[in-house]
Length: 315
Image 1 (tube, helix red, strand yellow):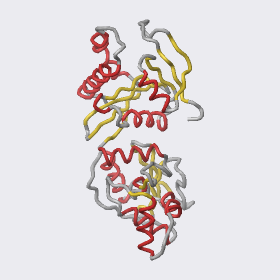
Image 2: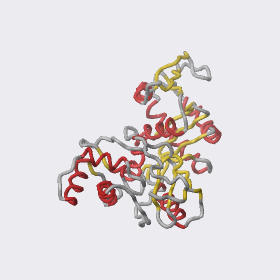
Image 3: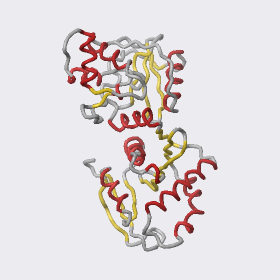
């Protein structure tokens, strides 16, 4: 693949490298993904003002904002005949739909006029040079499991949540009063649904302080479904200060998506949780956190023991 130009795009799932031969998009990779920049010409030079890059950035902005009906882009994918056949089949999997590796292998085999294996198709899918736009994230294992995504399974989960459920997560660098108010309401609903160990009047005591805490936390991730805020996560350094999801969204993977974004992209490594909130403790354990220490009271000296948990090195 002869690639002459590159540029970067800061997506909600991390920085992406775009490549072009000057007229078509020839590469799009997440930073650090397997096979990133494969075939990139050693004489490729950064250039931000190509029309093809402008079109790709506009497409990506629309995609990550939840727009479904996106127009085509000019692509030029270079690979073996088998790889290009697989990539063409990927392009025909519609937004918001999925296929298994076996189903994709059957489609490719029908086109080639010969039997081909899911393993061979999976290898070609993994070398797709244009992530997201050519939807390799829409391919699942035989039982619907998320496997084999070069950019990381957590990104695959996030892309499918966006397409299948209208669920997006972005860092809120600006925090208008309307957003803070909506998140404070989500906090209250969440606490009332999960913190049944609190003494009478505690929610009312804490509620006036919550907007200020949300407004001041250094990093704030907001989960939205069809644009409506449904949960949030706040971080200071590598410490998760808060994670709350509205009760109607519990058990639907929102907390996991927030924590994966925090750990995989923002470097979160520690969190504190009320010991009496056993569901939350179990959630963090499933996310790979282990107890580091315990305090008999919370930070205000009230009778709510805290567990300080850290991400296990094996997670």
